[in-house]
Length: 126
Length: 126
DNA sequence: GAAATATACAACCAAATGGTTGTATATTCA
DNA sequence: TGAATATACAACCATTTGGTTGTATATTTC
Image (tube, rainbow over all chains, first blue to last red; front, top):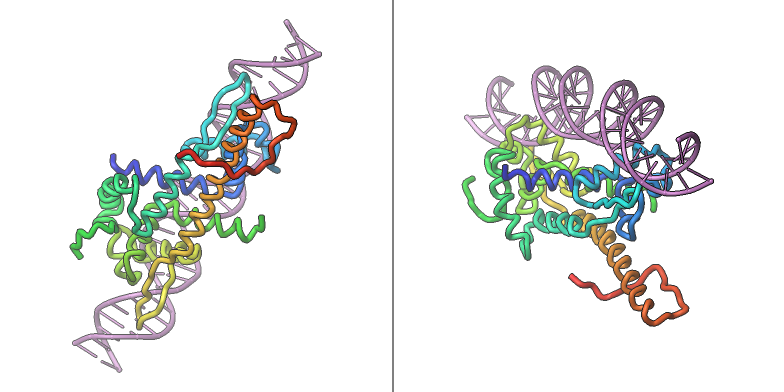
């Protein structure tokens, strides 16, 4: 489906909407950290932190690589840039790669929310 | 990090993490819309859309003004800018990491005695 | 004044979220 | 080899979320 783009936006912003996850992001953007190391930084169980890391990974905000028994996580700056572009797109500012996203959103918001989405590419049919 | 600041970030990203709310935002950034008009655009109850508008309003992403019996909503660019800055902060941390890596690579040939500091404003390579 | 319209909000419900503990499976180390 | 470590994941639980319907209150409009 073409709503994949909206699914991705949902996942991105949802992942960012938690302070623990944002803090994890700051750490993994500064450098690689194992899940254990990250878990040690918070007052919650290892499993809880592991779930936060999984949410971030599913949103594409971090990548994991394996080194022996540990999983090293590092931030993916491309996903952050995607989020930034989505914000610009909301304001109605279209530039760079956003033009490509536009075509997708144009259709997907019409499908997802019925009755045509709020695209700024005037298709006026009010 | 003040908790109020994190609360605000939570609210901002949470509000953005729903496709209906993002679609509402696109509309109210394009121009003022009454809650009724917005509600008419989606396949859900008026109350549901009203709640979405309330979430966006609490996050500061839109403002409402009263005109007679209707409430006109319009987007607040400042809130979107706040969200953008939060994302830029992450990118900035990432740039710092890249800067440190480059500094280390430089050092490996120079065999300098001095260890690099945490924050380097290095050239970005996009 | 009565009816229609626009908003607000409470109460309710199913599903998702953020946490927990427990178990299983690799991998490293003594 | 056996113990400790690192990860993964299932099952469970309380709270939040996104939707519903119903009711109340202004404001237009007829």
